Image (cartoon, rainbow, N blue to C red; front, side):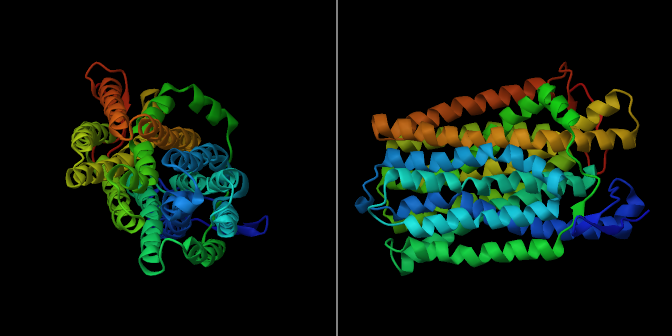
Length: 456
């Protein structure tokens, strides 16, 4: 059995796709899936850079812009909020238009916020205008949802942890890359030239869209399934995983947006000093995300997720101490550890999603192939919702920082709040997926193993 490509609606469409069939996978499926993964990563990478653009734009906004730290936190919080909302329609756009077609469109949409920022980025522009342009960058956040939904359909369950981790990790690297480009601009031209940064990204956006057009494919079997959406919405595991994803991805994206501004506001760093440190955490967190997926493939997503939340609580305790003592070196150790751990957790939580639904299907007596199809169907519908809710965690982090700095001039109170949330995530992960008497399901716990209903 092999995949065949047939033109339909003017694009590149693969009419048959059965990745769980090992013969199909070895003969043609793996090669096609890896090619689509490569260009999906590129487009998502640029999307993340544009979504987090205002995490570095605020570093260029000196006293001449007339915006206080609370106003800057609200700008980046607006971008986070819009990026979370658009993840839901972006998820379903893949089935409606095709993964390749929507990747092209979603990449080209990034020209709007980048071009708008290029026009308005100067002292004297009204705060409302900056707010509107920051909201536009939210379209970059949607790229993650459509990309993950698309790649989820290309790979078999035994490869999903690795593939989704690599796809998301490569996309997440867009955060430190835009911060590194900002560092280069500030270090060479100075903080008064933000338009140089924006000019770099315009041709990159066009290139990502062109490569997707030429090299990616649409999967004809992938269709919007309103029944699957309704079932995913009603399933408690969708919302449990969304809660856990707030703790992992919400932390990663929220801290990525806020890191530089926290360094400027609480520790008095200059734009160049802040930019020289900001990229480190997001870079490490992005690089390690595929490791989280691979560890989940091997040892089980819930086990890795629980260990991650325990460690994140410990790292947050270090940050609370450093914030109170105003120790920048200790603060950096704890904060960078939070990025690394959130990256691990991002990979493990996303691995859990398809495995949970497939394991439930097996427990109901479905055959292996039927259960795999059910898992793909439900996880594809659930991922958009989980990704959107998880991204809202980034908004919560920036609003917490805004409130903390407005009332006390320090981020300590915000970090104490985050510590309590990680403790709640530990409790939920253990109670639902690891407690021996919990009537729950877990993804496969070994490489190549089939999901099973377990009492864990």
